[in-house]
Image (cartoon, rainbow, N blue to C red):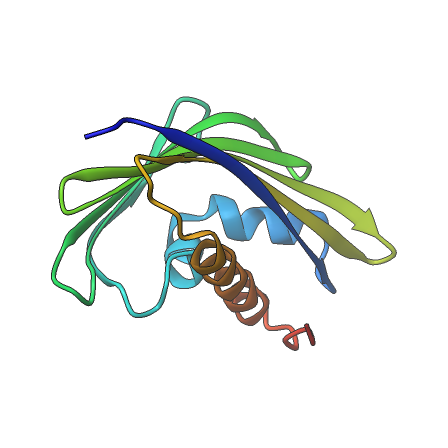
Length: 156
């Protein structure tokens, strides 16, 4: 087997009617985060924990539609309340490492609301590539965040 890493990135932006403090809180509160989490809705969660502090982990174990076990392991690298969250995460399925990512989520005051910018830098391992699905899954999670904040969904 050839070991390789391919690198890419994507940026998603959203505007919320809620304040930066309220949008940030939806990321920080374990119950809220579990409701809108950025994982695909079709994934069958078997275990979810979050320790929202620098050095803390967010673990998501699931069974994929094809029956493979999936693990997403995040570690929080920086948390600036109401302004920024920086985390790294790895993803594996069926015992195979698929990717590692660095994600920066920025919260900016935008009038009476919030402009959110999410930047994900990815290293895909050994030929794995699911960029479109990763973008779609993260977008779906952000759409569920609108619902969590009781806002109207944006038009894309």
